[in-house]
Figure 1 (cartoon, one colour):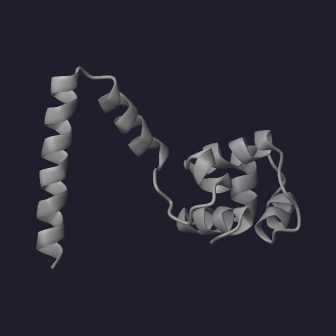
Figure 2: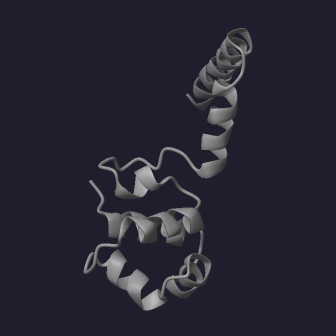
Length: 109
């Protein structure tokens, strides 16, 4: 299981950002981000939220127990939009999505 710091470092590197770049986006010193990444310090919840926003990942991913980077903010917004639709539309979209996923998995074999 990855630590908060490891998750921040992973996401930052995945976006090809330096600690200074992340600092500018989040309003947090690059030196402090380095301390978070080395797990020398733990951020406040407000600071963790700023980092999650700058990295475009959910706060739950950064502070949660799971290692899987489940959802970026765009995917989460799509799921929230689907959830707000009438039942029949939501069922049709999820049925279609399930079939597309199944086809992609079969294609990958």
